[in-house]
Image 1 (cartoon, helix red, strand yellow):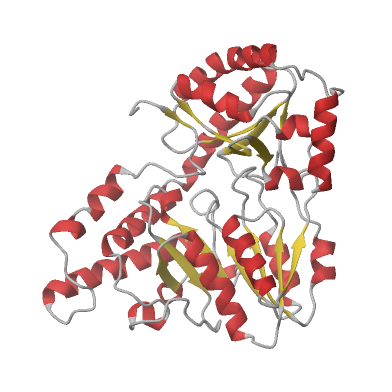
Image 2: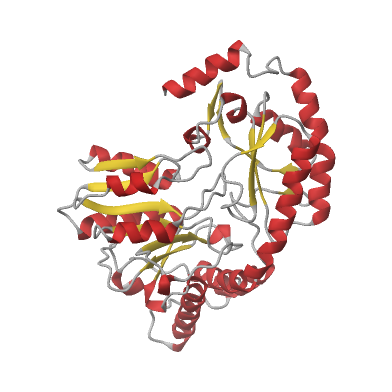
Length: 400
């Protein structure tokens, strides 16, 4: 399905043609080890240094502050564990209820290892209460880890306000910016962020490459211990092709930052078209402070899985706000944290656009989606918030 309408860009993105062209020679022609002393390896080392500068430029950071990783999950783990190793007497971590599993599952493991973790709640728009954050901070807090923007709703947190509060308690501040990089401007030179994670496949680079920003002066102990690579902060021979690709993708992302206005216009057209043509639909999350490419829409009284399967028949790719498993439907932990009614949780769909999305594609979605929703609602026995089954399911969600 090469001609599909792809609106699932928060899951992964198409590799840009220029990115692919930049990386391919390092899989065939320039295969030397960047650490080698000879000229053949030296030219590869220069390509790695150039890519580091390109990533640093996108973040408003210094080259020496960039560590190449394999993915966002590695970056998140490396940052949290480094913060704990650097402060062995501190046993408290703060994060949020709506983080990516890379953070949440690590924190749950650390709880078993004796650490205390505070999970900050969000309101019905997915925003944090900064008073709750401040009340949770103590002298025992080693690190606060908060995502820049949520992968499901697109909600953007007030990162700099959070960072200013965190600094008052001498804790380290880590930000998972996997969804934010390339979509909103960042400047680490003026930021309160100590460590920041990004992933290549969210900005039109291939899977298997990412980066971790570590502010100069922050004590960092490596997750992967080995050779001298990455100035001793991440052992292992560098994934040169992936690094070159990430550098090129970072350069292009910086050039296209102004273009996110176009993505926002298309997102708004899609959103308003759905709200105007399909009754009993709601926007999940903060409608103002969110990523320009993301909308999460709840279609009441039907299953998200059924919507996705129907869209797929028209070659339209999106994702569900629900995690569907065999024999059961468990709503998204993010949408549950917003306290949404089960009738909305049950049928929430995320549409996430990219610079490749066209207006014709949005028009096509608006053409076919109303009929899909109408047909599915005709088949559904749950057409009202008063339905006994919906009340029962909502009470089960609340009790978890």
